[in-house]
Length: 96
Image (tube, rainbow, N blue to C red):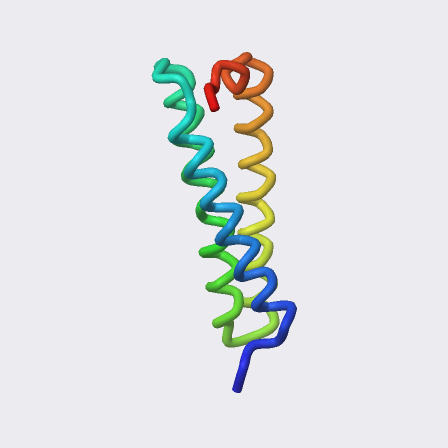
């Protein structure tokens, strides 16, 4: 049985999100504070897709909700680290 269109869409979006987080981390300045915050960002930002994939394999609605909610929590945490990087002025030091 094939995956629903929505599931494939979110699977691709969460993977692309993780790849963008990886690229951002790689571009951060090599300052201690940027690397510490960046590692937190890298961990939370790349786990969103993993949580979504785990949710797709859930054995019950309750398990699906729990795994999906875990991914949403990781998204909130990712936003927090992005806000700290931005407020600390570390995103402005990225060279393209």
